[in-house]
Length: 282
Image (cartoon, rainbow, N blue to C red; front, side, top):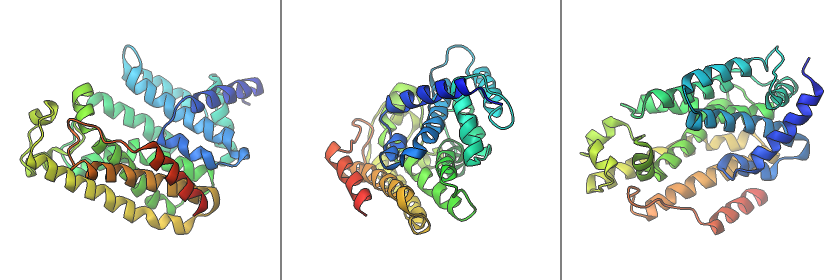
C-alpha cells in the first residue's frame, strides 16, 4: 500500500512542477475540471522528470534512466518511495492507466543518448512514437478513452506536434545540440548537407525541403482531426487547442518563408490567447 503521506507530498510537488513550466502540455490544463487536476499534474511530473533526466542528469544518463524505470514500474503493483511516484501510483490505479506509454517515453530518452540523426522518415516516426505519442495516450487514459479507435488518431496529432516543434527549431537544435531531426534521406533528396544545417547556411534546397516537411506535419494534423468527433467536453477543447497551436507554429514557419535556420519563428501571445478562446467557445 502506498504511504498516504507520500501521496500528499507528491501531489504538492507535482503541482508545483506543472505550474512552473509553460509548455504545450500544460496549456491543456486550462480546461481541466478540478477533480482531474491532481492526476494530470502527476502525469505531467512524470513526463517532465523523465525528460529532465534525459537532458540534464549528470553522469551516466542511460544508467539514470534505467534506475528511473525501475522506480516507475513500481507504480503498477509496487510501493514507490519517491513522493511524486506515490502520487502517480494513485493516479495509475484510479484511472486504470496502461504502463506501456510511460515506458515508451523513458525509452525515447534513451534514444536521445544514442543518436542525433534519423536516416529515414520511418526512423523519425518510430522516435516520435516513443517521444510524443505516449503523452497523448496518457491524456486519453486520464479520460478513460485510450482505445483502438481514438489512440491512432491521437498519435497522428502528437507526432504532428512534435514535428512542428522540430521544424520551428531546426537552426537552434543544430547550433546548440548538434541534432538534426530532418530525415537524412530528405536532406539528400533536396541537396542539403548536414554541414549546411550545422553551420546554419540556408539555401533554396533547404527552403523547399522545409516546405515539404511542413506539409507532412499538416497532413498528420488533418489525419488526426477526426478525433474531435469521438470526444467531447474538456478533452475536445484540449485537442482543439493542441491542433490550433501546432498549426499556428507551421503557419509561422511558412510566413517566414520556411527558413528556420537563422531565425526561430514564434507564435505571438495574441495568437495563443485567440487559440485558447476558440477552443473554449467551439
